[in-house]
Length: 197
Image 1 (cartoon, rainbow, N blue to C red):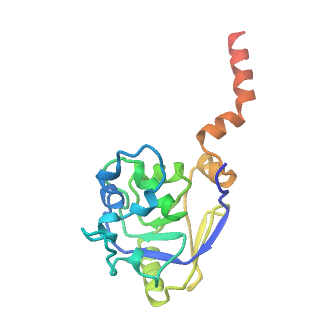
Image 2 (cartoon, rainbow, N blue to C red; image 1 turned 30 degrees about the horizontal axis):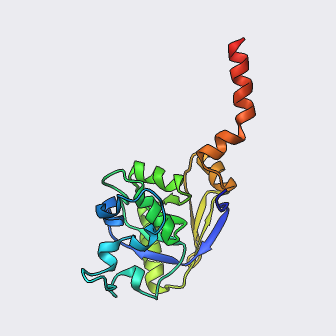
């Protein structure tokens, strides 16, 4: 069972770039791995490190000013190839929420399947978040999954976000698709018996 998702209140890491694709999230050379281990270290690898492997100080993940469990990203996050490894890297780094005004559908589902909550907000709310973080890197955002709200704690402005009832249930109970099926094993067996009659 994974960590249950309820209400997260955290500082944020801002990435105010649009059209960030999965190859930028996790470069193709890392896709040979078949387990999720170590992917967080390579999140945004080509932006985080130079060719000698040294940290690029100007990149936000290397800036100690910013930290937290929430990544705030520009519009159209996760476009490009459907690699699930991108979601592995985001989760492996320690992000539990990604906020954007638009996600590529496949990447959005990959995040949900890896217990990362993609929160879609309006472009005006996203712009305000970036502004608040820039003015006060220690500002916090509250993401309330039960109520499906996101709140900028600096301005106290909130928005409602959408999520499927099934995925909400899985996140709040710390279960994946297989866990869900196993929890309904008796019902499935009973249904099969009834269908045979």
